Amino acid sequence: MAAYVIVDIIEIKDPVTYEEYRRVVSASIEQYGGKFIVRNGKFEVVEGDWQPKRIVILEFESMEQAKRWYDSEEYRSPKELRLKSAKSQLVFVEGL
Image (cartoon, rainbow, N blue to C red; front, side):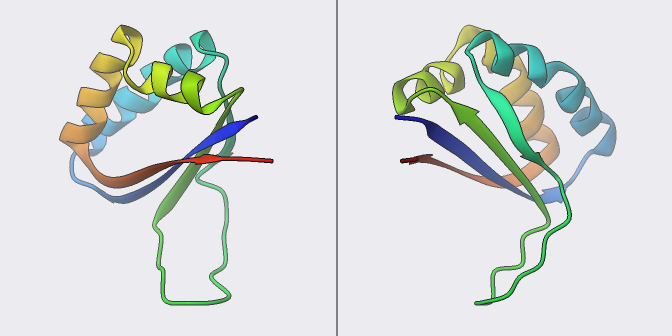
């Protein structure tokens, strides 16, 4: 069953470091079979009061594979860049 990583980048505190993160993160995602579904595309809130800033959605073949990527050595350094440069929220969710 496919799984998705949904991220809301609430605030970019250090744009230079965040751009470095964006430059290097794709290789780790691809290595674990993931792909970008959404990467900061235009959106419109139609219900509720959620006000996301930058939405990113990744797709992996399974929840286990998404977790392997997130906990991987290959993502460790990019994750540190993201955590240092931006305030974000991240969830894993299984698809159909």
